[in-house]
Image (cartoon, rainbow, N blue to C red; front, side, top):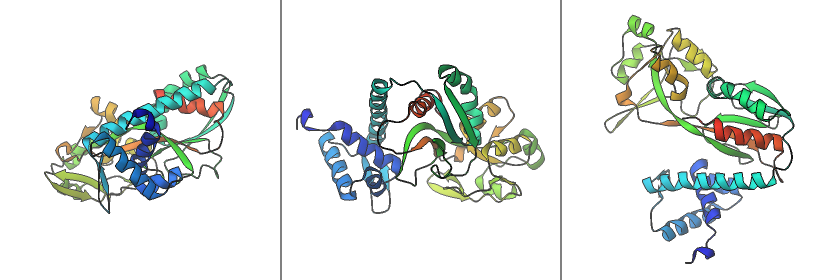
Length: 301
């Protein structure tokens, strides 16, 4: 088939939606297509490329190494297309108020250091920042952009990925001196595992010993409803935490926290997205400016 007969950007858009939405049905809802249409398009794409991108069953799907690379390159290409279109249409100066909802850890460890640069670049923009780790209703809360982790649950929302971070188990030297250093996940039952006080998509702490998966349910004496508060509790020697590496990396380098059970870490990652409500027509310049800025400078690793 000649390349001119293939809408490759449309194929990429559908494929990226399948990966980021977590399945064919969710991608179909987000794109206003039928699940069968999405499935046929992915099969046609794999046939054209002569490579398996997704290993799928009735219950789950998993990307192949080729599928992971194709996703990353496709997402980058689609972002570049969006950037090119926005640049061509951005004749209007960014002016006005932006209401941003963000988690405490993203605010503290990514956004705060960037704010002077953003405000200097866009002097006509005013930021109204709400900090919470719980999911909010963007429309009911009059929120323009929210920074969230994990997959989207509403097809009316549009997401722009801000990267992903590996999860790390850690504790302070003072805590380990008092209570000992766990050498196996089974020993965590004797420790104070700090918990979040709100519902999370993955509640248990996963570990892997060779091919055996181990799940530990945190049941410590202290819980907190925001990530930065969780980090402060760990620094104070209250207990053991499991958090994104970008949050605790500086503390580990400085010796304020010690990574634990790294040989049992399954390597799971937490994804970050800038989320906004889908709407017809071009985005307001002020919202587009912040989305582009976060995608360029506010990425999580």
